[in-house]
Image (cartoon, rainbow, N blue to C red; front, top):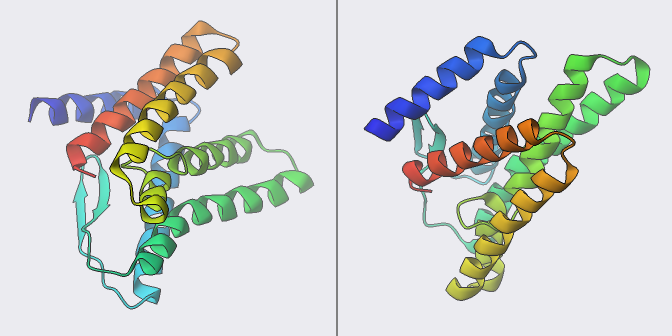
Length: 180
């Protein structure tokens, strides 16, 4: 319970002091991502059991064939891609900073969810394709290393690198608590 309270307090203060609404955009983008999974479930004839907590929305696993699971997993990042495309169309007509930030947040959520980490969509899709525990664990370690290398190489300021790494760690802890 202590971890959940700490994470809840961190979310509250991030929303309170976020002048550019970046954290709010992360929450909105994550909700749209999960709605993509839920809609795909309904379209494929499966009414998902949904758990909502402070750490996000979790779909309870069901006995579905691998093809249906793969489609449901893919639809979350697909929704983020659609949002990126819509934002790009809006930006091509008139630049707006908040639309640009929202587009970037969706792109990051889409790309990070496609990483082959076992609790992310990409890792679960890889598990369906490969079906090997050892390859999943190897890809987990390589993906986490890859994320931190990218964060520190492409960031011009160490402050932003530390913030990005912290957000990833919070995301990782939240998903671990969620039991995904």
